[in-house]
Length: 282
Image 1 (tube, rainbow, N blue to C red):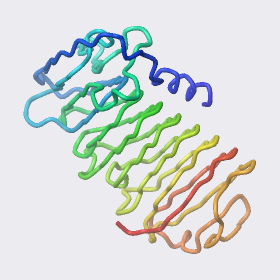
Image 2 (image 1 turned 120 degrees about the vertical axis):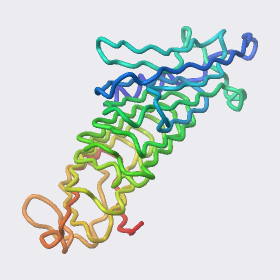
Image 3 (image 1 turned 90 degrees about the vertical axis):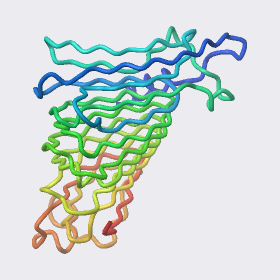
Image 4 (image 1 turned 60 degrees about the horizontal axis):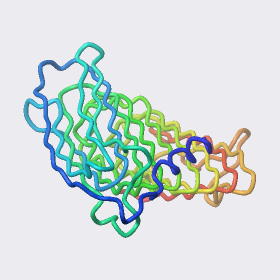
């Protein structure tokens, strides 16, 4: 996990000099929806500003890009045989905008069909991202973030059962809101030196299992008061505040665990990182 986080962080470092030329271009691509069979979608964005939402109408995907052609190249490809979609912007070598060019680092607006079941993975470098994930038909979701600042929302219910959500955070800050609407059943979270916030408040569709591995960074988890919470902890220096929990056998339980209709079970592996739990109804 730490090796993977280091690779992501390295890929998102600001390495270009101010003297390097910039050639700004814009491109807009889309593809019509021909059927509603499931797809696998990869969105890889190295640097800049990204916003993502569900597409309206009969569109499989739509992407609008502003990019520096000297340093990056756009990607938009759908393989109808394998049902794999690749979108984004790739670096040419290891060149990226320097820190003082952050406000002019390019942008991407992407829309994905709300009519097809989708296994979605996002690979984000030095990115500021707003992800409107509600209304899609997500079956699996993976977010890997290096030095990104990302906010993801499920303002509308996910239209499929989200079986697994995998979150890998290097030195990034990733916040996910209204995650109860995602209908997720399993979350795998790995945090290097960054921060991860997951809001599970609201009406859960079923029990949720969370495996969280924290190296140095922290995990903030919000769970509605009526959900029962169980935490199994394996910590070195980090851990979590145990006020409001009762120790029973293999872990720590909230007093309402046995009577609760829905449960959140956390398997915590913390080195220096810590879990912060709140119980706010949203």
